[in-house]
Amino acid sequence: MLNRINEILKDRLGLHLLEYEIPEHANTVKYSLGGMTASSFSILVISGIILAQFYVPDPERANQSIHYLSDQVFLGWYLRGIHFWAAEVLTVTMALHMIRVFFTASYKNPREVNWWVGIALFFMMINLLFTGTVIKWDQEAYEALAHFLWVVKKFGILGAPLTEDFAQGVPLLSRIYMAHISLLPLITVLILGLHLYFVKYHKLSPLPEKPDGGGKQIKFTQHMAYLRRSGAGVFTLICLLALFISPPLGEKPVLGMEVTKPPWQFVWIYALENLWVPSLIVAPFLIGIGLFLVPILDRGKEIHWKNRPVAMAVLGFTVFLFGALIIWGKVTTMTHSM
Image (cartoon, rainbow, N blue to C red; front, side, top):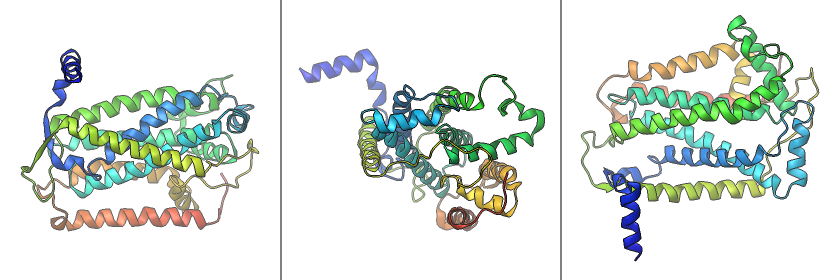
């Protein structure tokens, strides 16, 4: 009976189209980091939809509404914790996914376009993380927004739509909130769909040890089962973190003060800013250009890491540099004010 139902569903829903073959190494942790990132993003979307029912996107009430959620709504603190830790886990898995792609040279011909699509997805996630930081509207959020406004004002008329004065009568916080829950997720989902399309079109990149392919093949449905298990593991980890570690939340901000540091995802640029304030503009620009140029500068056919010493040196230096800047940003003292 169950087999008959399964056959009917396959026929009606076209599930038999998922029975195509992919390399067996798809069912490994390092080649499933993108799927884990997608799992965290799904958790963020679902928890965010629920959290939006309790949030008031007004500067006078925004912070208070989050405190109300955390202190008085049944399991509100836990729901917010899940949302927060899903973002933290997403950051880690996304970074590891990018490192894996670079390490295995999966950005090379014919996958250059999907590398660029992935970079666009990376910057969209950063925007979601930043706007998520701002809308909690505590002191950390206010200071993050002050730094952002300093940057956009340097772009003159190009940055005007992102300033407080652009839409008179509509608080900038409300516009940021709307971008966080509508525009940014919509664009992110579209880019994610394109990213997955190119993975399907170009197929999973081969193992560096077997650049010509070969090896055992499995059905994509087996990979989906593996992704479901890994997604369940990610969700369990997020739930445990939310249970034992509460996300930070301060009180309503005191305008004109600068006493906090940004979250660890952005603290590296805080360290650079202490050295040279225009780093707020220059550093993201250089990072974007550098990531875009990767498949253009490295066009050789070699994909094994042992035969790519320059690329490995660049990767090692980049990981070390960002790690050092994050640590330095955590311990350094502010030397100026916006």
